Length: 256
Image (cartoon, rainbow, N blue to C red):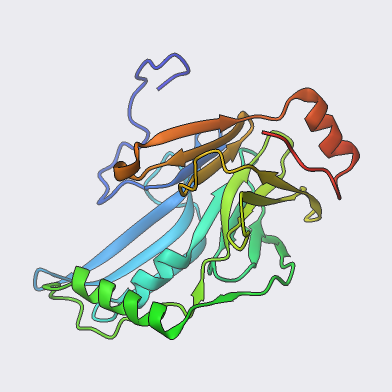
């Protein structure tokens, strides 16, 4: 679709098994997104390869940044997919977190080479034994009757610590900290891999969990829970606040 909402045509011409559920533009005709390949044995789904790649108007990726592969008789791939996060910016830089319970971000340049890593050394958040048991029971209940899965799900022993929100108009990566006691806390990393500032947004949603997306136009926070009136919030920095962030990157806080 163009900027006015007029349909231009399909992005991919060839048939594909599935369409990526997350995607970011990384060039005029290129996106970074997820893809998957499945193996069938006697009509049964037996293995899955799931990856983050760059697609240049083709279903075949030109670059693969990270892949997961698993025999589906185990639940390893389900856990690993839940722990994987990524985002990208329009210049082609891709950010990948293979385990959101640990603050480690790999930064790939447009050609797919590793450019740097962001590792601030933040402590992980361990789960209690009861929380782990509850997750195992919930997973097993939801996969009852799955012919491929034979049991033995092992959740991560840690809570998610970060999520990648996106890249703003100044090329800065926003990383949401899930260990904040209140509000919504973000670490903002500049294009050199240095911490530019921390941003604390007030709890505008009344204790509802929000999923955030940051791009060059601003910050979107969405509550997607159908039981709690789904809604989307847009938050922006005005010119004076943007200047303050640039003048005092170590101490500045934003205002909603």
